[in-house]
Amino acid sequence: MNRKPPEHAAPPRLHIKQLDAPYRWLVQSETDPEVWYGVDLLENGRVGSCDCDHFRYRLAQLAAETKRPWNGLRCKHLVIVREALLNALLYSMAQGKHEDETKFTKTKT
Ligand SMILES: [Zn+2]
Image: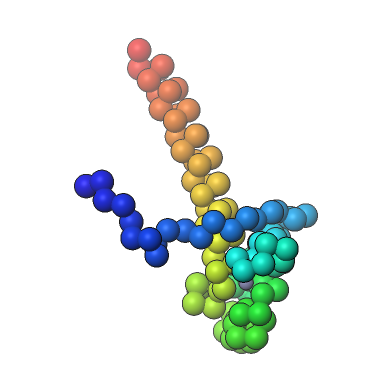
């Protein structure tokens, strides 16, 4: 049970930078590393917003009308930032869990 995931399932490795708030980020363009797109996770009723063409010309209007926070309305930049945030949260949860287990073991001995 140690199969590698198929290549297309590999997460894209785009660089991201947090701006002045935890819901505001910059995401590097895949095609032009000089370009960074601004992402705001709370816009459009938590669908988010992104400066990339795909979001601005195709998804933005749908997102503004629908305001249903689901991934079908999000460009890859929004999805990447959300996943990075979730990974950070899960990492800190795992750290906390490890500490809880250590405490539990200590009280038991
Ligand atoms: Zn985008």
